[in-house]
Length: 197
Image 1: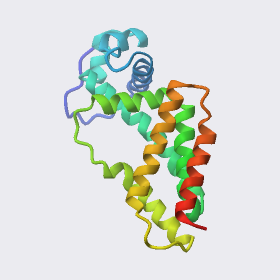
Image 2: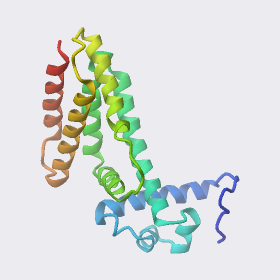
Image 3: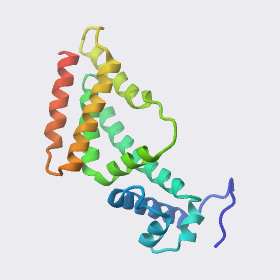
């Protein structure tokens, strides 16, 4: 098996796409079960039932396959949340964001662990605004739709709500019996109090 040249323009075959998808799922499983350190190329290959060289055909490094797995988990989360937000009216979009974010992460604990591990081990420069800004925009639009005052600090509100979501999800990872749906509703109530009628 020869490795595809860097920058090659040929589209991957159906089999190559299927193998990449399998390797991404295997990586998510390993990172969730064993942490970043436990997801070596050899472990990924073993769980996928292929050789390490075959993994390297599709991903040049462990960092590359972990990045692809992280992007896959994030894309699933974003798609779920975006669908819920778009289905809600403007005044209720922040609540839809909270409920769908917590719900998705509850239903996909391996994705949650994958996202956390990848962020902890990524050397990239993260822009915190990329996390809070979309929610701040939803909060601001909801405030206006509800006829609320302009003195709500939407940035701080979004940061606090995001922190609340993180804490709810972290608690559920430590205690699988923790009622994240009830916790999300409590967070929504607190947010609704801030936004007004």
